[in-house]
Image (cartoon, rainbow, N blue to C red; front, side, top):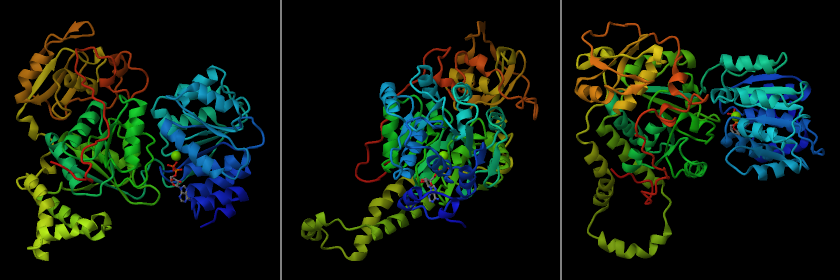
Length: 591
Ligand code: ADP
Ligand code: MG
């Protein structure tokens, strides 16, 4: 293993590294830094999240720029405001002994004129999100015509977020002969394409294998009935009393709902999604960082770039639509050499996705059982014993001790211990004593539920721009049914089928029949034919009709169905999500 000295870094940077407490370079740093210092070259560097990519490009850039000049020489593009601020502060730390250095962050949601005035003072390095950057170049507030280095950080996430055009536009204002350094955790074809388009014979550095999730994350899944999803989430949390986690949901609406339920149930939880104002999001993130929140319930978009250390668990409350997203989710834990766990709560209908994810991450999932009630009581009891053992005594109570002793004078130590533990234990015991087993048997996963379900026929289909997922979203929106309550969705050209539980059939007929869709009246009836096994779901060809369906939905895929202007009458109930102010008496959970 080499040292930072041997990589060719100058003394003032080495001094900063010592101050930061970095002892040895990580693999990506070891492989990337010497090349970037030595050559003027384009480079593609692939390494998992949390492997220290910021320093891998940060130090070479700091060494190569001329801090005595006021000209902008380096540009770093990053997907989110969070990351942009983080990179900026890292670079400032790395360059604290570089006299005259000025690193400026450019991002949306903050005063553009303040940012412009910082730029006018002369920024050798600009760290920016693509949207705001494009805007400021357009207004001639920023000149990147003389940059020598351009970093595309988290390129995969930038492309995921639909920044391709913004990046193209920004780079068209930069010189052709600059060096471009692309950093990414994964290498989907979009990233390969961008490398082809914007770079000249880039060197490629790969740490670990491509598209693989973090090494020290273990992957677990829990198979439950869809209706037990929330109960399973609670148990997984209760079985891990020190949990510090991000809980991923598929839509903003589910994110908000799950967070509200958790708060209601006394957990230290909060929601993070795009319907919150920047201010609210900052507040939530602050509470999360300071551990006032133990469970951050988030959408994929909102969670991008969350770089909070020591996240113990990532919980996939629902799997993402695009299974590739799983890598990003699980990469939020297991950072900086620590072990992390990524848990997936799956219902029967999603069970097969686990296999597909295993292929992508090239690791196996362990199927685990949701702990039963008594196991959780046991875990909580021992957790309490250990917390008591490790608690620092608060001497503020000393003066009350004589009176407290008087109150408890008649109890022996044994009795006291029993009573103290009963206070906590009884709460869990009462909640869990009659709790049922949530686990279901994997062997009879597929067709069991068809027996009690009804198959519907509707007169809309692919011609109306609906792939199965779109139809499912539509049915759910109209009926307010849950994600797993609508299943076996098959879209044909001019008609489609789907199933729901028999008990929902009146509700479905009533909610959908006669609704106008794309200027046509939807007619729905109960289908006489059952679903043919494996019958033509046609899931392969992507979700082609989606954009049409979503109308103005915009190019960012992540703007979910429930965020766009709805074609249908009112539903969304939007509350602001403040970090829970309940349970101020410590992390106590109330049920
Ligand atoms: P990535 O961009 O690859 O996801 P980061 O650059 O954000 O990772 O680094 C993750 C964390 O590791 C940061 O907190 C960073 O300060 C720390 N770090 C980076 N390099 C080292 C090192 N050589 N030794 C110890 N910690 C490091
Ligand atoms: Mg990074």
